[in-house]
Image (cartoon, rainbow, N blue to C red):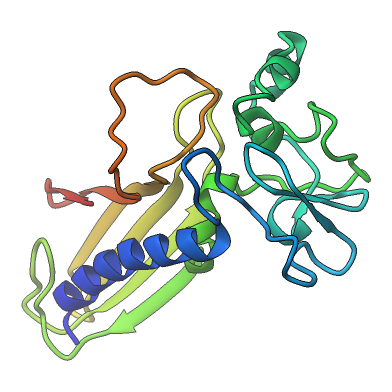
Length: 232
């Protein structure tokens, strides 16, 4: 299978998968996105409990855990969380948005740390694409490749890794691609991928927002060939 076909398939599959998982993990209404369902046994793990909230059902987790199915260590996602908590955003935003409680769970007192944490935590918004984080390798029998082809068959390594969550803005995952031949040719691409649920809550007021938006996954890459690749 050529790299061109693999890359096109990956983008299409990611977008479709993001749609499907968003629908499976979240029960959508006009007002809320639910991370759990009280009617499903162990939907928050064996020790967690699914609690109903107007802004979306959430897991109440044991000490040290948080998030969907209580799988994540209790910690803040954004570097601005302590500052936001000092501004009392955890409290005043609670009636209309779960953004700060989801992304600043420790600072907002939603969970209690047991001293364990991840060096780079996975933001809740990226849960639907967490399965692809890691290293993927392939080898071809031809030189066809997007955006620039080789003259000979090649091997390709795709690394997708967590990125530091910024103070603000949308959190991404890092992408790097290295394709090379036994004859010494090499292409290197770097970039990022992120997702945008249609009913994403950021804690900020939005105007003129369409009621018919779709979930989105976007990939942007630059390479040593001088090309820029964008996929949505």
